[in-house]
Image (tube, rainbow, N blue to C red; front, side, top):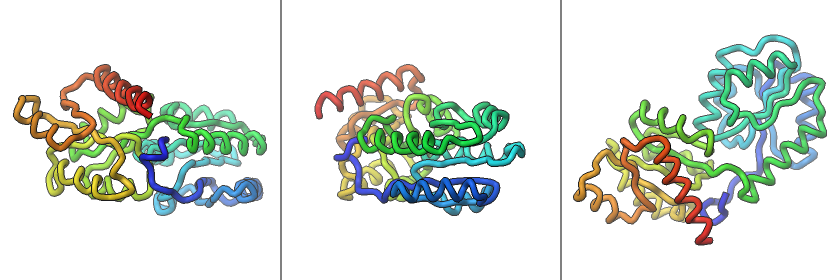
Length: 263
């Protein structure tokens, strides 16, 4: 991602999820530590995983038994990875690897490894991912801010094969998310209750860490007067909420291409 749009972040952190902290998992944690990569093990419990999620840059799901991975764990990881714009490495037997790949979009799985684990291969994959992230070679990250959960879900599904997508339902949640995460573009609902889109934009522009993040407004009003009101705030652009999928992808793609040409 582009350094001029991001604030300084904590060192890369890997959250390792497993059935129990086995000898093999402890070996993996030590390898991460030896490579100066922050890490933490958490058991396969939704509430515990959620408690330790913040600050995570990569998730590793390590299934070192042949027990079937629980559907509720996969459903949770699907939602949490998507909302946080993160990816996951899966280490499991062939059957569980297949189940995970069937349950989660392929965009959420960075790599999968069969057991017994090729530890050097895993470490190389993790190092390469963090290098790509640091060098800006990875997927662009988009944060969508809208109070309509149905609309959030639709737009997230449209974009997540091409971009890393995170969603929040209010301006305050957006500011909290941006305190710990990166975004290359924010799609911001113009008309939200409590804190409106213009108010959120004002807060973003007044903060040193977020002032340079590009913002496009999402609006349901396409009349000239409404559009002029939006443009007075000088966002990078605006998108009508009735936009079709192909047009949305085209407009966002064109924006990033133009941005690259200006750098």
